[in-house]
Image (cartoon, rainbow, N blue to C red; front, side, top):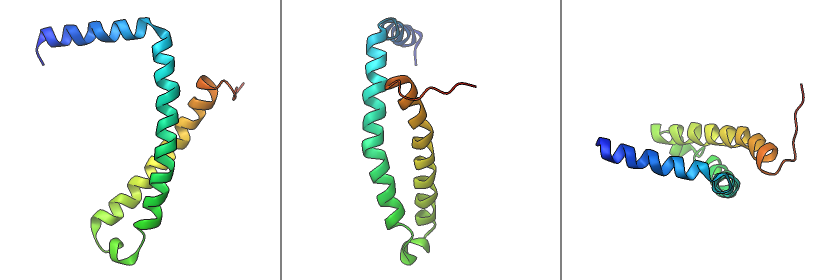
Length: 93
């Protein structure tokens, strides 16, 4: 990446993050789309790849572990979505 391209991308990012409304909308709808597509897709993967014929191939085992890690990541992001975007969950220590 050239220095001109880096400067223009940094300028674009600074303009985006100055407008906080756009960032909030990206988080709200981005998380929502990730949840609506991610959970059913990964659960379908968990139902598909444990079949004995697919488990014999190493990529089948890889896809099982990938689906499990994706579900765990989505569950961790769920707390951010509930607390910051929907402002439902407030944890006080």
